[in-house]
Image (cartoon, rainbow, N blue to C red; front, side, top):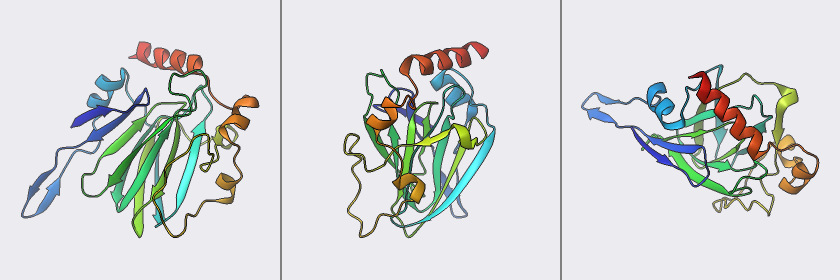
Length: 201
């Protein structure tokens, strides 16, 4: 498995080695040991999510309060999506910046993003199935969103005829609004949380 650190600190692209023969193929899409040596601690799996989206569906930008936050390990098992990691940690050197990675059923890459980072994805194929392993269970009171169309963030979306979001995502605050109300995690709080996780291991 090849690992590439993204331009956003504490986010990584994981590319598996695929073994192909006349029967089909085999790959390891998740290796806890490789991830642990990369990020400094194991991903404590507490929930597995799966979403099915049609072309043009945009989910996010989502994040959870830190601590505990919600680290995610995301892959597309069918179809393709453009996956976005957004740095919403106030005080981070890359605050407000993002990086996009295409996840599909050809290269079968995955993306890991640490607690405190924002996450979104746009379905590029007619039928896209995305699965993500997360470090904590869903808690409605600790789950938040940022407007995916916020011009300050400026996600570069492909030219699709129709982009579809949920009412909740469409009504989410901008980055500036969320920062002003204290909704966003801080860089220092996130670093302290990562250090605690490293110390446990």
